[in-house]
Structures are given as structure tokens and as C-alpha cells.
Amino acid sequence: MSTRTLIRGGLVITASDETHADVLMEDGRIAALAASGTPAAEAFTAERTVDATGKYVIPGGVDAHTHMELPFGGTFASDTFETGTRAAAWGGTTTIVDFAVQSVGHTLREGLDAWHAKAEGNCAIDYAFHMIVSDVNQETLKEMDLLVEEGVTSFKQFMAYPGVFYSDDGQILRAMQRSADNGGLIMMHAENGIAIDVLVEQALARGETDPRYHGEVRKALLEAEATHRAIRLAQVAGAPLYVVHVSATEAVAELARARDDGLPVFGETCPQYLFLSTDNLAEPDFEGAKYVCSTPLRPKEHQAALWRGLRTNDLQVVSTDHCPFCFSGQKELGRGDFSKIPNGLPGVENRMDLLHQAVLDGHIGRRRWIEIACATPARMFGLYPKKGTIAPGADADVVIYDPAAEQVMSAGTHHMNVDYSAYEGKRVTGRVETVFSRGVPVVTDREYTGHAGHGVYTPRSTCQYLN
Image (cartoon, rainbow, N blue to C red; front, side, top):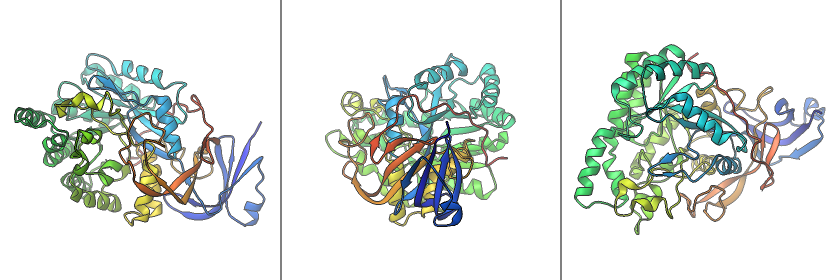
């Protein structure tokens, strides 16, 4: 049985176009588009018609950086694949790319299988995986080739967290050389973790234990130094590089310089760096712990460089690095020692709305909103045009967005499984109304109509900026 849904009268916004058009969805895909009111549009027929007059019709968001159920600091991220993908749907995101983790002493395959087991049958929206590489050896390098062939085409390494995820320069170079051969993309957490650990030790010895010192020891210069080093190692290896969660002016400058030199180097930032700052980390009574993440929040003056980087395309993607820990019982593990606060913030539900607010605030244009939140992450990680756009043949991942609705962000109303909001009390204009995932309504007129298990695993091709 073919099922058709017609969305009439909305302003269809993609990374390249804005047009008043009717969108016909059939069997989970976009079947056709036609300008509203034209004979072609009038000829569309469907079992179900949705009126989007006065609304935007946009592609479902692609969040290319989430950590559902991540083990960290003796606990686990509080969102499961079920709760986290449901919250993502509420926020207009219809695809996540989560990180499977290789533990030291284990194979990539073991890590990937473990993450498949967590996600399968539990997701409200479609999902894919990157692979965190924690143990570079000859077997790991061979496995990277096999994973690329089966659609896990990106590998994350850490210059931070010695003793946990950390890779030294030699291990990084070997993995980059392998990705240069197999078409994979290395994603880098660029912070000088060895130097940071010295500063942490010294701060604690001085009795500087509050959350704000987390930001002070993880210095912007150590992010910039690691970013520079990652770029040069990638250059030596002849490999592309994607730097995750860029937070500092100096790190943006390193990326801009590399891109000006014609290197295949890409950068991502996150809403927390665009909208929050060290003022939040310094909130009294341990409230600052809510904002502990790495790279850390920076002083407000860094925000201008991040917005500029998004406008000039020195930064290409806004993902969330969604990795929530409850304040009660999880963030509190670090009372009296900021180094024991689990690193991570909730945000998968807030990204599309915060970036729409950025359009209204004049930081970016409407098409750029869709570009950095939908189209570019899909292209970067081999999902385009299946994901990230509204075009015939694309998956019918479509959001009807009310650009005039006002909302106040709050833990009292969000759907993420965490007991606080990083944006508590923030007023924004714009709100998701209805969300389709492969043509199936998962949010309908602000009611959740999806279910765990609708979302399917989606293998990826290699980075589409390198072909």
C-alpha cells in the first residue's frame, strides 16, 4: 500500500533555495515538489494533506555529534538511545551520528557491536555511527579499512584525556595515514591533554576546586596548539581532518589559515560555545558544574569569532556534542574537585531552535541555518542527499517549523532525560510543530506520535567534500 502525504503552502527552505512550494511524500521519500498554486502543485493528490501556510518546511536536522549512554567518569550519559532520539525529534532533528567507543585492549568491532546493541530497536529517528579509536595498533588499522567499507567512515581521536581516550602523535599519524588510504575522515578532539593535566594538578594543589577552574586550566592556547598540531599531522599524512567542538578564537584562526592554504580541514562548533560562556561556569553554589564540558566554555568575546567563522565557512557545522549528566548524583561527583565533574551538556533538543534565534539575531541567514544544521553535516559524513535536503528521492525527513511561535527553554518542558537545561529561562522565537521521519509523523502538532524502533541504522559513504 502506497501512502502519500502532501504538505501545502509552506516556505520550503534548503541550503540553496527558499521557495513557496508544495511537497509530496510517498513511501518514505520525497516524491515531488512544485511551486504552490501552479498546475503541477494543484495536480498533487494524497491521502493526507497538511497545511503549512505561514510556516517553514525544512529538512530534518542532522546532528553529527551525540553521545547517548556514553560511559564517562564513573557514570553514564543520562540519555539512552530511546530518550535521546525522542528528544532529538522534538527538536526537529531526524538523524543523529553517535560515537561507538573502542576501549583500550579491545577491537573496533567489539565497540561497534556494543553500540549497535544499545541502539537497535530503541531509536525514534534514524542513526549512524562514528568510531572512537582509543587503541591504535596494526589490528586496529586493518579494522578501519573494513569499517569504511561497511559505512562507518569517520574515526574520532583524542589529544585530551590521558589514560582514557588519549592518542599520542605517533598513533594519530598512523590513523591519519590509514584514513588517507581508505577514504575515512579523522575527527579530532584538539586539546593538549598532557599539559592540561599538569595545570589541573597545580590548580587542585592551590585549593582551586570550583567548576570555574575547569575552564581556566583548559586554556584556549592549548586548544589552538593542539588544533595546529592536528592540522600539521594531517598534512604530513595527506589526510583530511575534521576538528570537533571548536570553542576558541585562536583555534578558529588555525583552521582559517589551513583552509586558506587549501588544506582539506573542517571545523565544527556547538550551540553552547555560541550562547554560553565562562559566566555560566562561574555560577555560585556549584551551579557552574552544569556547564562543565570539554572543550570548555570560553569568555564571551570568543563568540564573535565563532559566528564569523560560521559566516565565512571556516566553520562548517553546528552539532551539539550532546552528552547529558544529571546535576543531582552525576555532576555532583565533582563537588570539591572540578576534575571529577563528568564532562558534557544536554542540547540535542535545542540546536535547531537556538540557530533559528541566531537567524533572527542577525548572525546567519535562513539558508545558512539549514546548511550548518542539515545539509553540511549530511555531506560531511556521507548521508547526502538521502538526508539534509528536501528534493525528489531524498528521505522524507521533513519539519514544519513555526517561525513566529515563542517559547521559553526549560528543564520543566524539555524531553531530554536530564534534570536541568543549559538554557533555562532563555526566550527564543521559533518552534518545531510537526516532524516527519521517512514520511512517518513522529511529532504531530506538538504531540509525540513516534515510537522506539522506528529509527533505522543508516550506513554512510565517505566525506562528500573530498570526492
